[in-house]
Length: 393
Image (cartoon, rainbow, N blue to C red; front, side, top):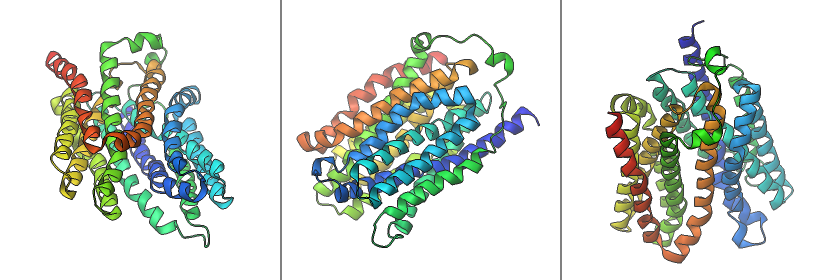
């Protein structure tokens, strides 16, 4: 079987695994605060389970990179899915035992599972070669679109499945999804395109040498700003909507459209990057994030919130997938675990911090202040991206 056939097979497998594994986070995000209200005696801690999901994701990036580099991606990803199954069971045990601490341990473990799931996009890029790399990343992200539908629907179908214990069934279904991912991941094949033995045996640079590459630094910064701003604004948006007189249902619908907008463009993002270049599409994503802030500042009607959230989702898609594609140009196969793990640690560490601080800033300074902060962050990265795009052209 040739490398091209193996690469396409692996991309299909990773897309299916993304659909199953990516559904874990929406379950925690949808129910973490509600379960926190039931189990925590301190109202200030009710959102801690969701914050711990993001913290676990950030802290799990480097260990997951080590495991997949040491034992191979198939074995590493199966191990990660095992962590995901354990996370759902621990969270369910916390609900059954009415233990807030045990429930938080489960959501923290779910973050560790998320670190493995997030690296599927890099595995897809490594399974392809040349211009197909960016298309491979986009296709795996399509699995996120399916996950964005599966997760919330499972919450609806299973939250009352166990009589007398609300939400227990949803976290058991979270564990079941992770277990279903294991036989899917077993189908991954070794030796994808672009990872020849000669490349793998080539000397690897140190992490510091990679970090000092201008293009790598720019790609990481673009990923940080794209994902960090999205998490920052999205975390505050539902609270702001309800605070300005809109219903909880309208806020939930706005977030649903936002999540769909995050992943739906993945069908053509890869083709756009192949035609116009990674830097230009990344810059377009950042520009759309800035435009979403402009719309949000224009008014507080429901339409302003919804349109802003949709633009924010599309901007995240272009910006984050573009930054991911830029990262794949900055390392050899021997360096990929180190370079990709360091990138995800910095990106998702920022996401965790953004989710921690968004609520406090919203309470202290308001929705307008949240959106005004978007512009300097975008400008800081947009200028070097445009310069880099012109230079590469």
